[in-house]
Structures are given as C-alpha cells and as structure tokens.
Length: 434
Image (cartoon, rainbow, N blue to C red; front, side):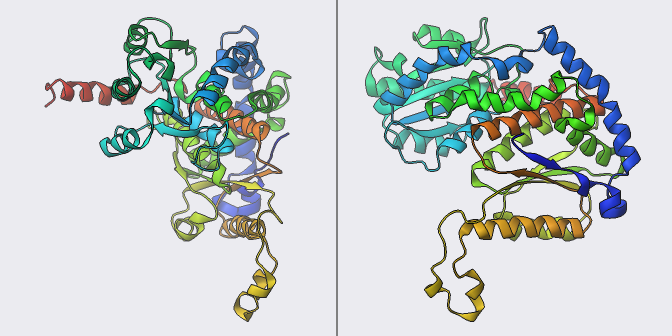
C-alpha cells in the first residue's frame, strides 16, 4: 500500500467523548457493505467508466504524441478550464513542476481557472503567444467562463502567429455531441479530444483531463494509475470493509458528522506539492456531498504554514472538525543549518538540523497536540510522494467520497443547486436579470 491510514484517534476509546463510539463506528462500517457490493457490480458490468480508468493504457498511448508535441513546441502551457476541468491538472502538475520557470523540455504551466480580468490581462501580456500552447477543457462544452477565455486567447494567438497557424496552439477537450466549445474548435480547425460523458469533472483527474497536463509535465502516468488501482483492488477482491481504507474513512467521516455534530473536515497535508491536492479534495467533497442539508464543509490547511494561522482555532475553538493530516517521511531531507551559524544558546537546537527535521517535528507535534486536545484526527503516513502514491491518494478520496455520499443518502455525481447560479448569470449577461 502506498500509504498507511491511522484512524484510532477519531474514536472515543482514544480521545474520549468527542470521538466516535466503537459500536457506532462498526455500525457505519457495516453499512458500507452493500455500497461496496454495488461498486463491484458496476465494475463487473462495466457501467462505470470511472472504475475502469486505473487499468486503462490505450488512452495513454493515444495521448503520448500530443504530449510530446506540446513539450517540444512550447515554453508555456495554459490550461483553460474551471473546477474539475482545472483542479486535477493543477494537482498533478504540482507533483512535477516545483517552480514556474521554463526548463529544457519541461514547459511552465499556467492555469486560467478564474475570470478575473486583471489575471487574464497580465497573463496575455506576459506570455509570448508564439511559444504558448493551450488546452481548453469543459465537459459540457458550455461553461461560460471557459468559452469566454477561449475566445479571448484564440484572438491573442491569432494576432501573434496568424490564422493559418492558430490551430497548432490549441487542443480542446469536451464531451461528444454538439456544444459551443466543439463548434468553435471545429470552425478554427482545432483538434478536439472526447471527454468521457460518464465521468464528471471533479472525478476526471485520472482521465485525459488530468493525464494530458501530467504527461506534458513529464509525469509517469502509468505509475499514477497503478497507484490508483492498488486502492481499488481490495474492493474488487471482496475484502471485508475493515480492510478497505476508503470505507474506513467514510465510516469515520459520516459517523462523526451524524453522532458528534462534526460539521467540517480539515485536509492538512505537510508538503507544498500537495497544496493543490487539498483544493482538488475540497471541490470533490463539497460538490459531491453538500445536498439536502447533508455533508460536511471541507477546509484546507498546509503544514507547517497554517500552524501559524489556523491551528489556534483548531486546538482551542469549537470541537466540530475532523482533521486529516498527510505526513511524509522527511527526517534528514533538504539543506541543513550550518552548526557554526547556530552557536547562540537560543537557537543551538537547530545546529545540524535539516529542514526535513523541522517539518517532521512540526507534523508530529501538531498531530500529538490535536489528539491531546481530543480533536478527531486521522493520519496518512507516506514514505514518499511520487506518481504511484499520488494516484493512491486520488483514488482513496474518490472512493471515500462516493461511499460517504451513499451513507449520507445523497447522489455523489450531481450538483443541482449550482445550476440556478449559472442560469441567473446568463440572464445578467443578456440584460434580463433582476
């Protein structure tokens, strides 16, 4: 397994009355059995594309020449998309690209996810359009922000390189059938890749939506999917729920929400490369579970930075949160403090210590004090952060979210409430809004 999940510090026999009772936890875990059986059935009858992503390779082969061309031809890659059309790619590229400067055979990535006019203007003014490639992603092909950004960037590239060459700079990803994105792309002779219509945006990180940016950035996406497959495998092998990590996580989350009034779940990874993982999880959890008055509010934090901003509230504020800490083995990693510079008695304890030692001390201390304060705390221990372990984390939380949704009694795959906002925004643009 690519990680170890520790959940005992969420239970009452470890943290007292603020934790979930053992009997209640086991009851929730038992409730996952028919959900796990449904997952197995949907895998067996091939009615869920999502469950088969981890084992696919033919789509990777088809994407390889596209990724190679983008790597070779462009210094900058702009991904136009919002929500799940962007967050999966951001999460994966964070694993591959530690900085924003172009390096040989590894372009710099820019994610145009918001419609902020200042950000768009700055990006267009700074990037050399002749050396910039675009991926335009919208499952529906009608996301108003994405369409507007696409049209604006299309014109900017055309002005720089001319109409004849503009198509070389763009690839569109959208579901089959007629939609605005596909129509615009076809009109300008831009290549269009099919987004699987049965995979929602927030679940698409392991599909071409996340894979193509990851491949351009140089990630081993076969290892990514292999890591994901390792988490799904125990379900397909009909293991008992207590041996299935996503089921354990879902039982803890839902049990605490229903029995202990835990209304928020805090995702706190101790790695800068996982900051965008937290943002991806936030959308996945919020949009999948927040229905009919159900669900818990996902919050994101990052260690050790947020030990100096949010931790005071977490330790001494309302006891209404579940904490998930993702802790990497990092002792001895990174540069060390030169002993001759740490001679002052007040800082002598830093002599010879690496930044990894500081990170390790910080994450261990945070976990220990949260538990002392009787805050429900689960810990993911990881020996390394690579493609396989990232794939495992992604699949874990996809499955945990789906299982939790069924325990809450909601549909994990729709988002009906936000449609009203989209309709009203279009009315305002048409001058019809109140």
